Length: 109
Image (cartoon, one colour):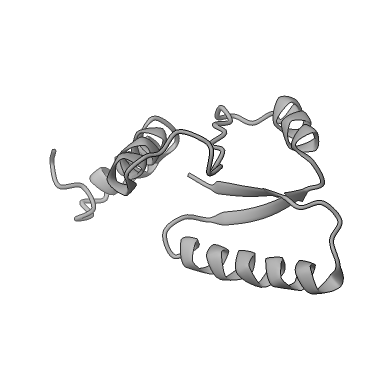
């Protein structure tokens, strides 16, 4: 599974852009320990949704929008949701390979 982080970042002053770039770089570095990750900035919500509609991939695109006015999840509930998305896709190929190789990744459950 690869995470694509998107941020809506209208044109801002150079100082604000530098702050945002630093925060995103730190966040991506921390997430990349667990999943490949890349960031894409959009000038507006409309641009983000247009990109999502035009996106074509072998696996379906799942948008998870983080907004303070949206539905609140406990961290464990959100982790469970992300795990379901991970386990329903190409992760199964990796698991199959580890089983065939006798790797301890698969615990037999």
